[in-house]
Amino acid sequence: MWIYQKNLEYPVKVCGPNPKLAKVIITQYGGPDGELSASLRYLNQRYSMPTDKAKGLLTDIGTEEMGHMEIVATIFYKLTRGVSPQQMEAAGLGGHYAQHNHALFWNDANGVPWVASYVQATGDPITDLTEDMDAEQKARSTYEHLIQLSDDPLVTDVLKFLREREIVHFQRFGETLNDVQGFMNSKKFF
Amino acid sequence: MNYYPYPNIPVMPGTPPKPDSPTLDFAFQLAHAYVPWQNMGQVFSPAEALMHGTLFPELVMPYTG
Amino acid sequence: MDNSQENPQAQKIVQPVKADINNNQQAMLLEIQQLQFTAIELNLYLDTHPNDQQALMAYNSIVPQLKQRIASYEQLYGPLFHFGLSTSQYPWQWINSPWPWDM
Image (tube, rainbow over all chains, first blue to last red; front, side):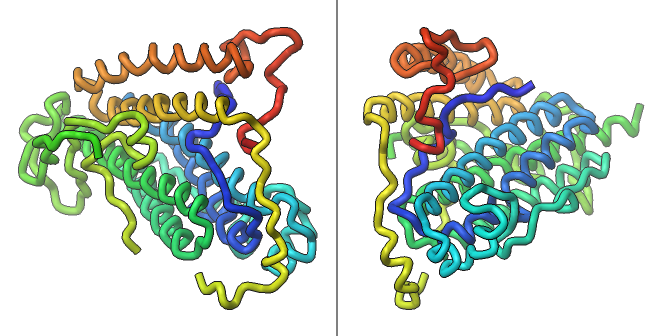
């Protein structure tokens, strides 16, 4: 079960419409290393985790990532609000406008739609937790690229928050990997 | 920043896992990945935590470009 | 980003996003966001350090503060939660604007 809370995890403000910036930021909504991939990956891997700590952590980080997806969606929504079709087209969002108008859609910065093969669940907790750490690093790198591309200081502020979350999540997944490896080793001797 | 310096040294390689871990005779193994354990010490105020993106000063690793 | 290459059409997009809610609501929400973020951080830490008494005490001390701020907010601006976790005044307030993405 999930409960919706009617506020963002972190407040989102933008300086004004900026479809060019929106076009690249959308990759953290529906790109390979985006927040949809992250939340679905963790929430789906929970079921095959061997320890209660790992089940708890994947539940909690997966839930937080859904909140991050909402933050990225809000950035895109605000950056494209009131933008004309011609302005969308000029910013490289003509294809987006043709298919989706101003609606949100899960695709990457080049318009490639999200696919489930961005995520994996092998059922091996060591492998899956290692993928999760890898995913956090890829998302961190992407946020750094977006910070480089951003010409809106208010958006950059939010991107920095989201980037820092990847670092904290990496630490927690790493601790969980330590713990699960210890658990798997202890099982070998009983 | 409004916090006091404190001795929060992550547990580095060569030290055993946290006390609640099942293996007490811990040894690092080849071809395994490990992350140093964090030990919580002094933390940010709620306002500072949200600004930094973490509650924990030792995890603040800002992007410098 | 190289702004010299900015296309001229983009310059015409100047209408700022309208902040259509009053500042007190955003200020109260910010306090909730700050306390809840602290709870999120402690929660994730406790997931991997369940025996850390200091972290647990910190978590448990945030909970009543957060609940109190949420109750004050809901009194003025309506439910923050659906599905039975918040009550509503008449008429049903859950559907009231602004939604988070419009704040």
